[in-house]
View (cartoon, each protein chain N blue to C red):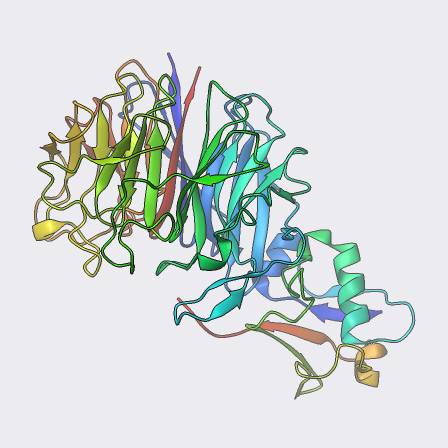
Amino acid sequence: MIRVVLPPHLRTLARTSGETPIEVDGAVTQRSVLDALEAAYPVLCGTIRDRATMQRRPFLRFFACERDLSHDAPDTPLPDSVASGAEPLLIVGAIAGG
Amino acid sequence: MSRVRVLVGTRKGAFVLSSDGTRRDWRVEGPFFAGWEIYHVNGSPAEPNRLYASQTSGWFGQVMQRSDDGGKSWEAVGNAFTYEGVPGTHQWYDGTARPWEFKRVWHLEPSRTDPDTVYAGVEDAALFRSTDGGANWQELAGLRSHGSGPSWQPGAGGMCLHTIILDPRDAQRIFIAISAAGAFRTDDGGATWKPINRGLSSQYIPDPNAEVGHCVHRLAMHRARPEVLFMQKHWDVLRSDDAGESWREISGNLPTDFGFAIDVHAHDPETIYVVPIKSDTEHFPLDGKLQVYRSRSGGEEWEALTNGLPQRDCYVNVLRDAMAVDELDECGIYFGTTGGQVYASADAGEHWAAIVRDLPAVLSVEVQTLP
């Protein structure tokens, strides 16, 4: 079980609260977690990754284990503690705008 | 007694304002989609409780919403806007070629006859259509690929397709407008398009009379007379009596002919409304006085409508999609401001009152006349 923490606007959109648990088959990577997240919550398609390019949206970041993983390749394995569910994957909106 | 429902999109959510036919007392519901930019909310003429909303965010991109109960509840629908084929390039602000890239939906225009069919005008400029209630969107790519696309360029607000007018008499004819490319028309349901900008003159482009490149801010039509179009351009208010084949300026005695919004009285095709804005560098009313101007002669001769509107220290803007008219016997006129006010007149502009004063900046206003 992967623990995903969504920013508040996306929790509202997905109609979830607190952490969002996600089951991932196979290797636990940014891509596999986001694929599973979007499969479970189709309304999130396009909100974290651009629908055309599948690139991370510029004002979002991926944090875990006190590290910024945003610039890791999408298929890089996430830390073991994220894969085991000990630590959450944080999807964080930039502090920007009005 | 008939009633009205005003659909307001703002920088931080949507609001639904409701009243009976007197339009004196209003119920305010919202914010819906709090914190998101709502570029447009519009209802189906065929099924008024079917609403579509464009929900967008610099952080999270584009979400599309649909309501089947007049805005009480909403469901997200499809948000995949994929350009047909190789997107190609358009002009960027610095004159370089830039690939087409989807950013957001500016305007939604539901079909007059089918609640499941709705058109979406998007940035970067293109026209999409859904025939399944918003679940899936297909580009009408003939517009973008008709030939002039590589020369289109963005206005200050982005290269947006902001106006969609469906001809009420001819289902194959659609008018659209793009900032800053101009106005276009299809006569075959969107397969092929032609620029309709003859007569426009814009001093801010190298050839003031070019076929494309004009910053058209808004088009308006009266449904009883679909061959007559009115236009608020960047500067200039214009009119066409031949479905856009040619245009003539009708700014007449307007104190300034810069502006964004323009609309037509519901029952009198020769009565039109604009909100003059000081200039392209000062987006607020002249002299701090918020004035709607009305022409009852189809242009040229204009009168200021000020009763109930602030006549000092007012420096708001009225954006292109932020004016609408209802269809009650005594036509109601509505507009929203970047200061968060939504003003209504229940007597065709003679008297005005604010329905609300302190919303987030208003991006769009639509009104539905309900039984």
